[in-house]
Figure 1: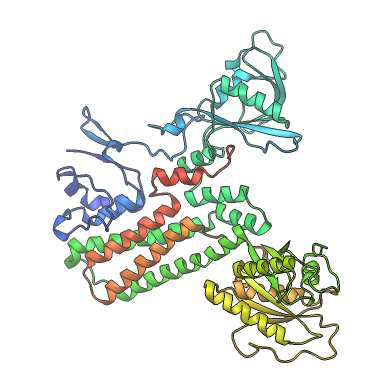
Figure 2: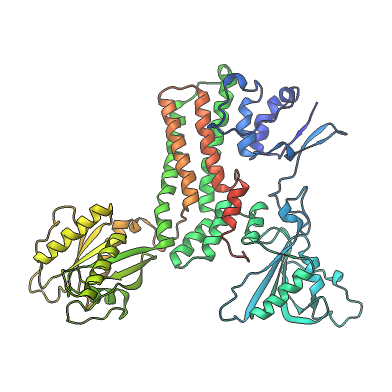
Length: 577
């Protein structure tokens, strides 16, 4: 008889205890999580004693493993599961059990920016089981370097205590004067032994210290390898690791706040909660396939309510996907209109700069002028265009063509008119021209009507096309000279693109494209599950959709993830992260 040794998950043990004797008396079988699209298990194929335990074995413990993950010890006639490679290493960073390839060597890299103006301090980081030994070969502590009997193997650092000394190369030449910060496992970013050498910030100093560490036995880290090790050792889940990369590359406060919220496990907690609910429901359904006569009737209302609740959580998470796109690429807003309506003045007033030349001569702007502003934490590029009109001037005609092209590619189009002139036939012609171009190109960019120069009008402007229709989403009165109406214009843009639904400062977590795709799959699985319940389809089909949902959620957190996906994610990181 075989003994199965698995992690002591309380939920697992509750189900294992009453049936362990039945399972252990059966011939050994390997149960792996099947993809319903490639293999749909029939009722006759299910193990009569363990069918309701399969989702728990496969999902709760993430045992999507090949046969090579099992080690048989004939002396004890025991089936032993290898140690989880993501568990923190024991001791001072030694590999726990059978370590992964990533943990067999110690990596090193410069983790501070290089290539620009040098900073006062730069950092070289090492991580791995030999980090302390390698640093011991190159580091001479200040109080011990003059002792004749001091050797590199005698360096015994205290975790999180800073030491001052020198770094020497393999020939004993002093390379730099440094501060050493040891962070021993598991109290480190990677949960391995980590040592950071704080050097002088010039590229020469950093490269010399790094070279000394590599000569002493370290390996140059791959892009994102420190964070990859943090993920593999259970320090971060995959969604948190992705947000580390987003935080490093954040270009505005909103993006940084959103990434921090993701690192703090706000999104991860939601995903794990939904996934656990899927597993619990799947466990109950699987049990009923074999023991339905012995169990109380299934409360369908309770099941449907739970599915609806999970669906709502997924929908709310998907709403942040659009905000992610805005944080990454920002908004492009084209300011169009006929000549001399104050487009350039509006851009200057909005951006608080003198980006565009302003004169009373019609057609002053001949090319597209850009300026950057921020609206609700989102980076916005304003595009001041040449006045659109019929002209014989070759240069101005090129500017008009560019203006029309910019308008079609913008996220929002602001059509500007003059309150002094009111709505003119030229404005009508321009509007028709824009709408015709949008229709031909399939553009759906919303349009805002800005009535500028209100300080020059004797009476409030009245009547314009689309006032009671759908031509313009919003109308805003502005004065570029005083800045009046700029805040109202930003509020209108926020409402149109949905920025007003984002918490101020952008502190809510967001989902990226990869996570969005998995959430969509989860949403579709829940929709199919509800349809199966409504049509009273057998329980077997319910389990297929629940497995789909659990697998998709596992892809987000990294509990069910392929090596190819991991490589793609972490290859986008910088070397030192």
